[in-house]
Length: 281
Image: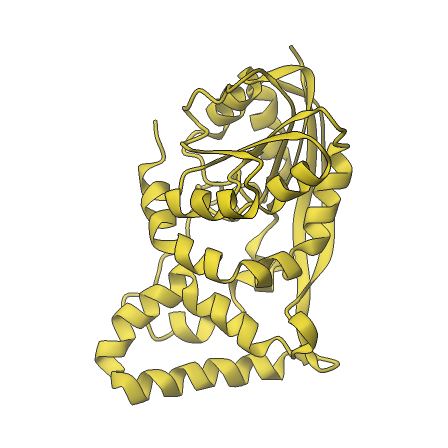
């Protein structure tokens, strides 16, 4: 089954990710570095970036002299990736069902927060594996639980509290950012997809929004307002509150973010899994 709902979500949300690409790259720099290190990319490798977004890992693959191919369900994300890494090949497709082979099997599969959105994760991991060479290595990062990650609440809670009806919390394991919070479930899904030598290790890092010497408040605010929650809040609350009321609410969010600065910069813990696996074929 194709990810129709996720395709729609990313069509609507891609603009915010692309506009804030530099912010996300700075905040997630420790995650990017951990994935690249775990992947052990070498010149001549064929690399597939799943859910490539605006192309951060693709650019790293090109820099490592790997033949780099990205796949993303969003045409807007893919276009941004092509602009960032013109030497790479970028395909608009659903990695769960698409034929991912281009000019040959892949030696490495990478992803940074791009594999948690499949309707059928085991089928998706199996489909990705079929495009890989024997003993190919996969390395990706995915989020742990909501309770460990202020990323999903800091600044957005003030918006969701004003929504009517309140958004429902997704059930555990549902497609979305924290679909793989359960490490045992994730390992089982990878095994079902034909992967072996699976390691799911905690990756704890600091989300520091202090980009280029700023205190990070406006950077975090920009990402909150462009998120799904932020877009929904604006759609619902701007007509109800009016422009002045909406701006007052945004100022409340800004003040909340300022209260969470640490040593002059907005920073908070991030909790992810760093996952590696090998194609058993």
